Image (tube, rainbow, N blue to C red; front, side):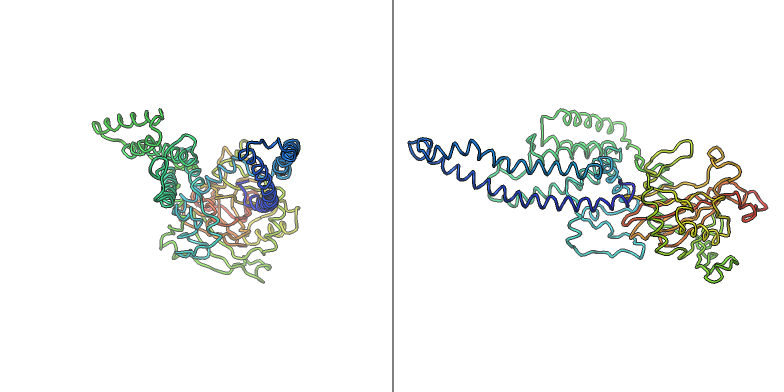
Length: 545
């Protein structure tokens, strides 16, 4: 479910029903519990008669009758009045919502999405925790405000310490120790603030150990959570080569449970390693690669910088770019030329067309694709796999599926001047990105050994990308070689060439879809092939053209 925002949107209605069902149950349960409380108080008052008098309750005929009645039927009815509705509530939950709810895998990858967004956009952890992750983030319609006033909505989105700890554990389980340390420190800081609050409330009162300090009892939930967080933090620091701080953290864990064998062994190990490091020099561990990224760190760093709008083409390149009204000499476009912006003149050629479809056409394409959606994969016709490289769901639409699809395909041909008929293109691919949805840097053309369309259709020559929706933040299309960032712009179309005029793949056409921060990103791709375009885009005079 996490791989498509469209599917996640359906969960809102599911949880609304669950909330309504639970409110109804709790209202009725409160009445039932009040009845049970009254019943128990009555039985207790009558039992007190035996304690206050030498005569047993059952020695009195009325007392005996009431006790027998209670034990023979009343107690059973009272228990059933509480237990049976709970059983019905659970059964209804299982029957009505089976198959509609997210899985443990969805939860795991949703946590990955938060970590990915934090990393790519360099989000402040405190803003994420407070439910205001957009603070300081460049929005698609301009920079976000520096501050956002507190509201009920924002408070509802605040992360609790258990949520923060779970994010830390996800980072830890995937060997992302750098981020694990950040989240574990925040989790422990929040636990310390809770302890301070408890101490202030209990000030002047006696506590079990003479202080308000949190101690590990083996069963105390808060203490166990803190103990686990310290263990994870200690090991994460150790894996990063921070031996001194790792030892300090393990000692704090040992103070909570001095008899814990694993913690004691870790302290001894760290002490030996520190002594060895002092003698021979400390060597920090290499930085672990980002678990959600497949590309090298250098390539990912540039990709992320473009997603943050930090890089632009060189000034001399920008000076040669232009905007124009384009008609391609076509009568259809002569009557209504399209606003066009050239983003890169060559290697790769990138052009942005404004307002090429209507809101109604975009909605029709989305509606047609929703029933056909499936998880996007990477690879070729021989081998395709699901991967964190590409977080989205997709569908394929034929021109025959709807007149709108056929009309948009014809329009793409007019805009590009290329043959966009079904004999020279693939079906229209519609995608909806998921939570933190992205597509890491990749090429659209296929290598010689990967070609899967045959010699008649040829390789993918051009990509025409339609933006079917707006998003509030994130989701830009970026070109790491050309230093071009294209924000999501509803109803716009983006054209870029995948091949050089020689027919070789243009390595500079490397592109990516940045993670979506806030919003639901819908796009559609039309891939135009070489076959049928031999005389529309002719070969150059040089193999490098």
